[in-house]
Length: 141
Image (cartoon, rainbow, N blue to C red; front, side, top):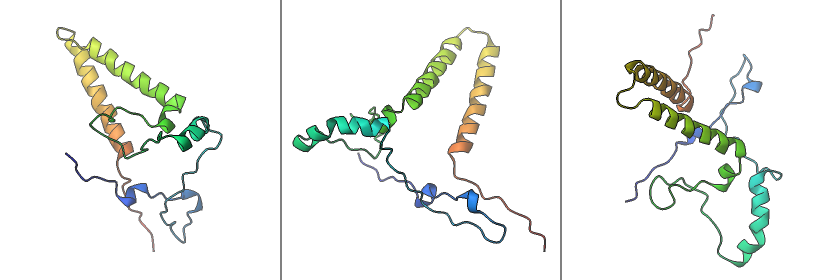
């Protein structure tokens, strides 16, 4: 069951605030994502480059699969970023800890505080992952 999906081009645009001036506004642009030739993902690629030339060892780098056999696969670029994977593991442990403390029969205050805290966290995450909202500027004439 395939469904069409995608990200709007405007979601990838960024404004370089360092060049903003009062006289003119900066134009949104797509910033280049350069390959870190000294990073762990490229070093891992260098280790298998010759084998990939001889055999069919290529992987599809995207798009992200939400279901099916490759839904749980993590791209090499993300997997080789130790800090990202380490932090993601900490998130999963924290979620499991909250779930184990909020079992049936526990103090209702625990459930209430956990619910309110998670709702606040989700609100913050929604704010950070949502599109940037335009802010009106009052200009005095």
